[in-house]
Image (cartoon, rainbow, N blue to C red):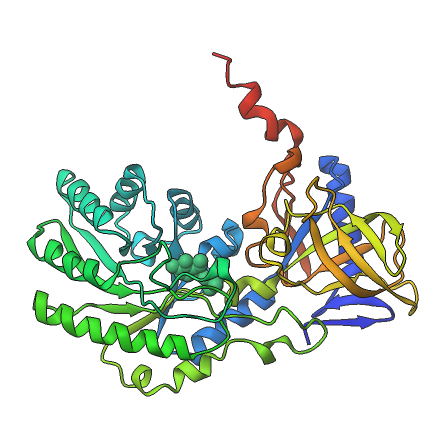
Length: 430
Ligand SMILES: Cc1ncc(COP(=O)(O)O)c(C=O)c1O
């Protein structure tokens, strides 16, 4: 069990969260004069997820999706696992990978809008592959590689036009979506590659969306990629090195005190799929949330309580600038009190401090009695929480901590107000 109460105190595996929060807050207050929300990650959970993934699909390689949780100290843990590389979407993410000791050969570069400078950077770092999303991008990569006297390794990201059951905003695999090449564009791309002296096609890739629980769309997508790989072999007289089914494995955002792996996407269903088991191709994945999602919590304090007729609004010190998923996707995150006062329960809305009416972390949830300064742990904030953080309302970015063995380590300092404002203050200075 990941979370449990012992004597009314919330434990996260072996970590007493009340004690840990006191230690963190003392450091933040004394050293940084900071008293806002913070993220805490658990290295053991990250490692459990990495091991589980690698063990269940032992034939595969994985390219961890950096956008889900990109702190360099987290990437260094990913680096411990030899069948893991990185899936990046910007020059900044490549740099993070390099700072975490990844080599270019371990990095695939995705994204619909790669800039010229980013393509050059990727070529200089000899990345494993550019995952190409349009004909114009393919031509641009060919032209830049030629001018640098290099050969660019590319994989074609195909739009599978497969519906996956997930939120509208995180569907990517439909023809109407902006991602990937349509079947006509795929044929044209092969012609361009055949004629080019600066492109080498090494893979085919697809990505269906995020937070998907059903394995059927992955099976369909694999069948499609195998079919397309046959066409590549015929047209280019050379097989591709790998097929990548992207990321998107869903996790269980409903549970908190149960063994939360029970309702995850089933990797085993992929492992048992005939086409996967018997494939002549190397099959890769790009999980993000599945690896990092459970590994983080956001700790927030109650600022004020407002009594309504049937419920209470608890205004807390973190909001959509620290965790935008509830406001953006109506996503749910379990929330638990770090220390229970008593067993009396009430219904709460957990509202953030931001001036937006969508700024809630949760609505109509049952919690034990809250008072000012009580701490709340927002669970499953390892993925798409800190990485989607912003300075909206001129709020500084929250710090990040990592539980490693029995210690808690600061892995991102709190942003000071000076640091937040310095780009503006220094803009007109010589
Ligand atoms: C191409 C690609 N790969 C992998 C991922 C990671 O998705 P997830 O974190 O849901 O596994 C994404 C997410 O947007 C993506 O666009």
